[in-house]
Image (cartoon, rainbow, N blue to C red; front, top):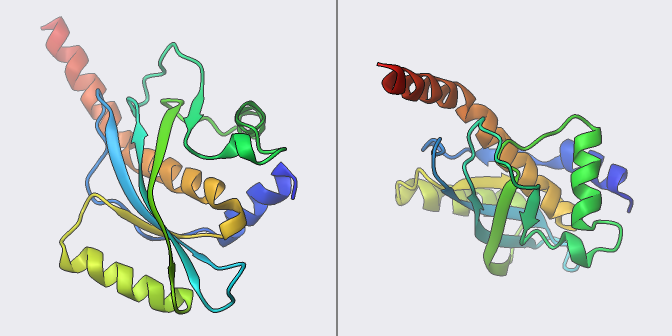
Length: 177
């Protein structure tokens, strides 16, 4: 599957079930835990469960001087999905990720024996029961999970943008008073 087809598939099929409630940090790094559910491409009727966290370096609207970095997304292992190719692919489409430094750490990769709707119920209830406001729950195709995870991260950054602007203005006013 080429990059364009993979991106379009992720856009069509990624669903954010539960957004992160806690906002991102404006002036420091933020750990964003997630649970990514995907219909299994090997065992039909089962669900692949990826749990992990993305470390977002300064996810605010401030653009850092460093070059874009997507670590831990396994783009380098996918032939046409190499990191530099993917960054160029996103930029050409007008997609810019504000901090441009994201480090994904998958903590577990498991199989849930049941359909994705059942997995959504189980993991959604678990997050609710634990009163976990920092983790997100999303679904996306297994073969383009990296794109689904980027879509989730972008949605969290967009959701946080008004807070970032307010914090930037507050910080500016403090320095000028």
